[in-house]
Length: 240
Ligand code: DC
View 1 (cartoon, rainbow, N blue to C red):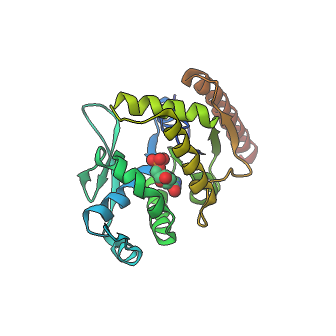
View 2 (cartoon, rainbow, N blue to C red; view 1 turned 135 degrees about the vertical axis):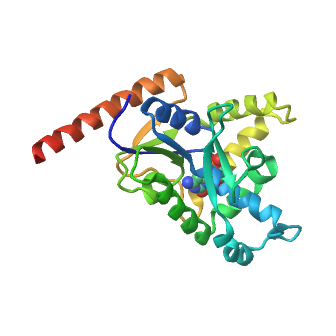
C-alpha cells in the first residue's frame, strides 16, 4: 500500500511486541522503521567499549562529553532484508541485544543530555515522514504532532511469558518468576524516571494485545490508518 508520508508513533511497555508490530506496519505501508530503543542501546554499548561504564559504574560526565562522537544510523541487511543498527558506521545489531547492554541501558536512558542528543537524531532520521518509530516517548516528546499514536500494553504475565519463551529459545537459564519480576522492574523504571517517563499521550490510541494475534493487531491498525488517510484527503479537498 502506498500513502502520503505519515508519522506513526508506537510507544508502550517492554516486551509488548512493539517492534514486531511497528515493523509490520512499516512493511505494509512501504515506510521506514526506526527502533529508538536500539539507539539507547548503541549509546550504552559505546560507553561500555570506551571505559565510560566500568567497575566503578557509569561516568555520567564522560558520557555527556562523548556524545558528539556517537553517531547512530540504520541500514538494510541485504541478506535478511531487516534493519541493522550502526554505531559510527559499524554493525552492532547483535551486540546491543546482549544481557549486559540490557542491564545498563536504563541508567543511560535516564540522562537528560543523552535523550536530547538522541531525540535530535530521531527527528533528523524521520526526514519528511513516511516513518514508523517505536519507543517510550515518541508520541509525547519526539513527535508530539505524529499523525497516529499507538500506546501498546499487555498484562505483565503475558509479556513475561513471551520474554521467557524468547530467552529459553536462546538457551538462557532463568525462571518464569525472575522474568516476571524483571518485566515489573522495567515498567517501574520506564514509568518512574524523571526525564521523559513512559506515559500515554492524551491523543494516543491504546492497544492492549494480551489476547490478540499479530494478524488481529494488523487488521486493527489498517482500519485506523485508512480512517486517518480519509480524514487527510477530506481536509486537503476542503482546503483546495
Ligand atoms: O525498546 P528497548 O527495550 O530496546 O529499549 C531499550 C531501553 O531504552 C529501555 O530500557 C527503555 C529505553 N528507551 C527509552 O528510554 N526511550 C525510547 N524512546 C526507547 C527506549
